[in-house]
Image 1 (cartoon, rainbow, N blue to C red):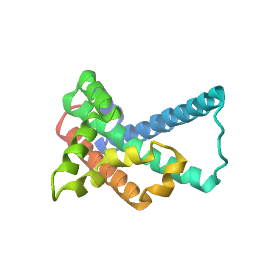
Image 2 (image 1 turned 90 degrees about the horizontal axis):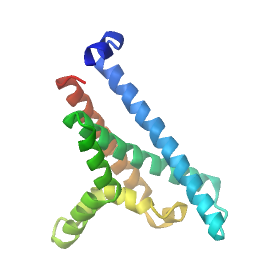
Image 3 (image 1 turned 180 degrees about the vertical axis):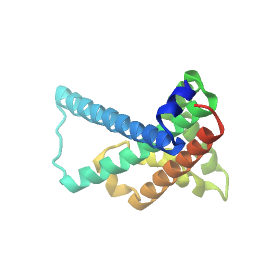
Image 4 (image 1 turned 30 degrees about the horizontal axis):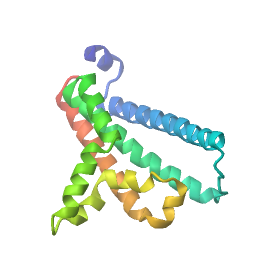
Amino acid sequence: FSKNVFSTVKSRRTYFASKAITLLIATVLFFCVAVVAALLGAAIVGLNLVATPFGEVVLWAALALLTFWALAMLVALFAWLTKTKTGALLIGIFVSIGLIGGIIATFASYVPGIEFLKDLMLYSSWSSLQYGVGSLATVDIVRIACVSGGYLLVYSLLGMLVLRKKDI
């Protein structure tokens, strides 16, 4: 399979960029479906939705998409490392339910001197945004952007390294 891929795509960087863009598109689509489902669910159960300034909605959506894209890149990295759908699926499940991040964050909050690490985890960015646009008032927007963007960059660089060393 990889021989066919590289006969049509000359550069591994181009191939990786296409995978990263595909992950971004999938992330945007899943995010839109989740937002529509949440709005429909709120309408069905009769929740009152408060009007929110458009700029805040866009900021929250951008931060959430950046965080989810980094999470998607982590799952893709595991898929490229293990070359199995099962490994990537398990990591995707563990990451999406917060199992790994929750354990590490809890551990870091109880060990003196390293409690600051929980704020540097991708899990903390994700959990900070889970309450919607209203959570922007209580979170550090710059920290979330830097942490999520940093993880996205690290996972992307590791992904390019893994794809350079292995057949795809």
